[in-house]
Image (tube, rainbow, N blue to C red; front, side, top):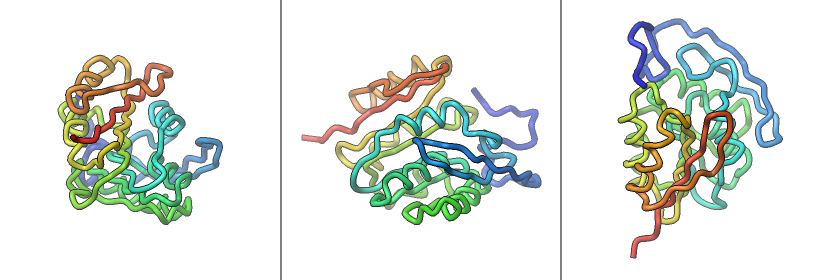
Length: 208
């Protein structure tokens, strides 16, 4: 659940110092072809991992407003959302500056000008914005407290009726995180499940 202290760097490192070993992922998502530049110290650099793919294939996107991809890595989730909803503005954030640079490159590579990437911890880079949808494959290796913070701090960044959609491993947080969703939103539904992963969705209900 926590970062491996034996490794020099991790994908949750803010400013990786090691040389970037680049790679390219070419894959089909939601029936459309995408290409992503990746690098070492960024999560799942060789392929779009099972959890991210499950979230992408099942995410429910709003028709208007803004989308936040928090902990974006090289940008797969946010870029796919931007490609399928060009009328929306997609903001992608990550604490890892190398990830943000890759996401910015991949925005241009996949021709999604309605997306942007920002560097910083959790919701700090977007404290000036309100979102109609928040998407996340959370950095579990940063610790469960960080994952829980993505949930509990989400309402401050969300408009009424907005949703938080998060993919989790069934064995890691599959039992505890739905409770956090329910405590935060008063609701939690399993949107999809496959291969030991599930996508949780909670909605910020309109305040009376």
